[in-house]
Structure formats: C-alpha cells, structure tokens
Image (cartoon, rainbow, N blue to C red; front, side):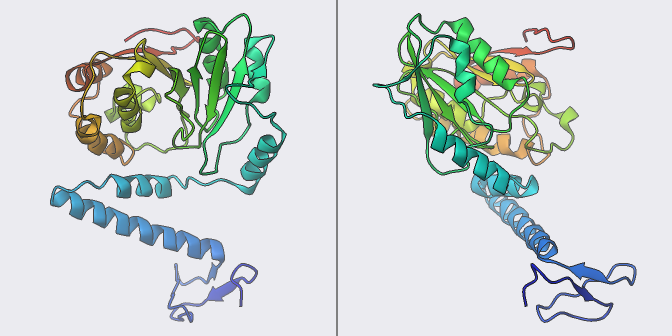
Length: 307
C-alpha cells in the first residue's frame, strides 16, 4: 500500500504496522507521506543536535553537522517548478566562454541572460560577457544592486578578466558553487530570507542583513589574494560591504577555523562572538584576519550609510 495515495487514520491506542501511534486529544490523525517525511526530518534534527553537542563537548569540529541541521531546519529544497525553470534556462542560454563571450551593446543587458531560479545542480555554471567599451565599476555595482533589489533566493558572483570581459557565476540557495578566482573577483550576492533566524536582535546587524562574509568567503579571499587585491564586495537586498584583505596567510584554513565554528551557530540562534555591534565585528575582522570591512546598509528611503 502506498502512503502517497492513501490517507490512513490511526485511532487512539492503535499502532500501525510501521510502529507509529499518533494521537492528539483523542482524535484520529491522518498518516500521509508528508507527515512521515516530517517525522523523519524531526528525528534527524534531534540526532544532529545530539552529535553537535557531543562533538563540541570533546572539542571536535561539528561544522558539517551544523550545516546539515541548518538546511533541515530551514527546509532548503528545490521545487519541481524551480528545477524545471533552471533546466529550461540552461537549455536556452547561448553557449559562452572566455574565448567566445556573449557580446553586449549595453552592460545592463546581462539581466536578460540571468536565470530566474537557483542552480540546483552540483556543477559550476558561468556565463561570459563582453562589452567593447569596457565594464566600469559603476556598471558592476549597478548590476548587483539591480539584481538584489527583489531579493532572489540564490547567489551570483562576478569575476572580471579585463576591462571588456567578465563572467557571472550562478550559485544555489546556500553557496556560490560557481565562483571563479582566476581574475579580479569583483563580488558576490547573498540572498536574505532562506533562513529563519532566532533572536536576530542579539546578532550583529551585518549578519542579519546578509552582509557578513562566510567562512568560505574568507577562505577564498585569503587563498586567492591576487583576485581580491583591490578589494571585493558582498551585496544583499539590504546593502553592501566592501572587503579589503591587508595581509597574506600561509595557512588560511587554520586562521578561519575558529570563525567557522561560531559563524554557523548564529543560524542556530546562538551568538558566541560575545558582541552584537558591527563596530565590534569590524574590529574582529581586522584583528583576526587583517581584513577591513566597510559596511553600507540601505536605510529607510533607500539611502546608504557607512559603518
């Protein structure tokens, strides 16, 4: 019997063949595939929380479990509609490469080539563009600000190879799997709204606004100093932050390790930084990574201010 097509009710004090007994206020509860999936999800989340607690108790890294728990809590999935939308876009988008980019007569026409859904696949997807008159910093800033205006739920990034050629990488809902560090890494976009934050008032505003660099961001910046030597940027629907690394490190993974452990706790409602202000976060980045942050949140009325 398929639970997908059958609505089965289990009365109080009755147990199903699978060992489930569902009673609430002595009322029958329909058992569906959706309910079973939810129960399995709750059990898995409980298991992950236990593993995280045990690992942290003995001083081991629980980042992988935290990331999996965060994705389950926020139910990060890709609907059939999203999958179909991306597949159709990928089928129809013109082929492009560094040697044969898509030729534009206006930098803002890149929008007509961008997808409406996240890159749900496991592969990197990059679109190359050429503009004979050259892409200026204002052009790239406008592309990001226009893209982020409606808060799309997936990441994108821009890497510039010369004044006239750039690539745009298409990421998924949680990371930019298509980022390229083989040119000048101008910046990337963080979606806001994919995650439910508990007690956001206890976090630095830059994190809540989607403007705080992730551990993966920092690791990429420190491992590829030439790509970000002129600084790079992170955009969200709430503003932007300029990130300027000031020093090279021999072992970026070790430098980022402590930050990685406390960063993902924020998504679980726990602030282990010991501070809540962006001023303190700016100092933290300067002291720990020798990275300068210049935060430009969008205020009421659409204006920006610097931190």
